Length: 532
Image (cartoon, rainbow, N blue to C red; front, side, top):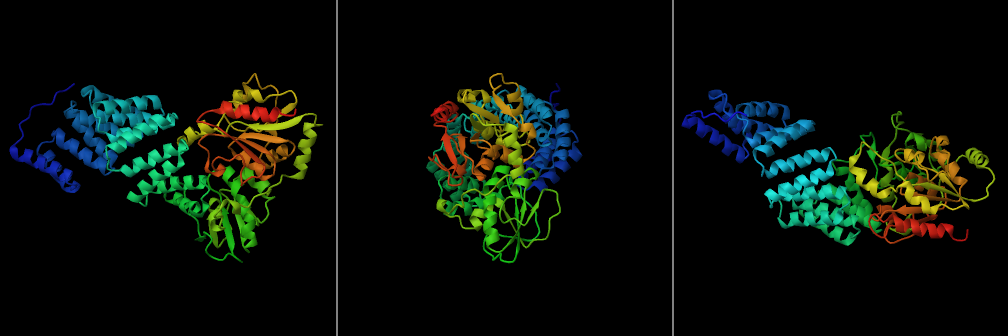
């Protein structure tokens, strides 16, 4: 490796570079650039000036230009650990993680106690979902720089991915104790952990602290709304929930017409209700369409294609559109999840409940014939909400929500006929490879959409499911559902309840502690096998 050559630099050039450093430090980036360019004009191989230009351009998110200056600086002086680290950060921004890791490793080789390099390398391996390695790198960063709140924050986030909640909490608390500049982000993140631990009042305290510091912190306002919904405080929760539209990560629809949130009279108007989030959310909130119709609106409902046939049974729908289809003209539009706010569901007892969907009778009759004469109790099961490879932000929640099929073996009984209602990978392959569930009837190859699934469910006595769209479907058609619910429950199932005001036919079996499916399965086994 080349060593930095000893080149005489005239004092006035050295002074000019020092001025550039001062301008950069005071935020005058353009003047710093001008001064660096003057230095480089006089001394083209001034590695420090080239490096500083890279830093400034990186800060201004001109990453390709910054890369060129870092390359030149490192070529002249490859012993500058900061240049390797900064170039590694640029490679990360340019979506080249392997090159980023090479540079950050070189920075660490040059300076083994370089905390920032360990920290930045942790960020890169985190994007590659190498979470254990990510945690170790943040630990090394903190070893060499104990006062490093950002490392505590990122380590906490990584630990949370592995469901190590108590360790996560300790990291956020350590970061908060160091009084970081963006302390509101720490309060928000700690609030999320407390929420996962179902310490809801403590979570709200943290969210309130963050919002007091930064009232427009959209992620925190959204998280607070989740806690308020969980507590059933609908009078303030639904309004707070509208902050989701201000989150950077939240998908927004660009639509013509006027957004509606319940204030304008919709009598004689055309209202477009568009879908949001998952299929289960549409199944849960489409019950409000009837109210819109009763208010005098012509209702256009946007749903995914697999929902079209079952939604045709919904009272109050005038037209259904699917993604990509031309939109007919309308006066107002609203997200389906904003309907509880628009229609004044400000308390639990105002939830419009009951059966509101029904499958095609001919399809129900088809499955009745397909199943044959009933001789045993018929139970449908769903053990996985599926895997979304393009949404790593939900992987941790999905892992906590889903159950391994083998854990359900204790439910088997010679007087019960089980039917799989499970669609999607990796659960379908899990069933195919299972040697312990050859008693599980599998007609899912005949289920082309939700109407088919509802028709099959109509011929069953009970559905046992994790929190997924099939559970919503069964509840919407009035079929008894036993919900296997994770400890850090979704807001819609409220707190400390075994019933649901959204679905009168639900019975909820909750984990008594995080990850404890054994207790849930044992409780269901006892109730399922009782009186057989």
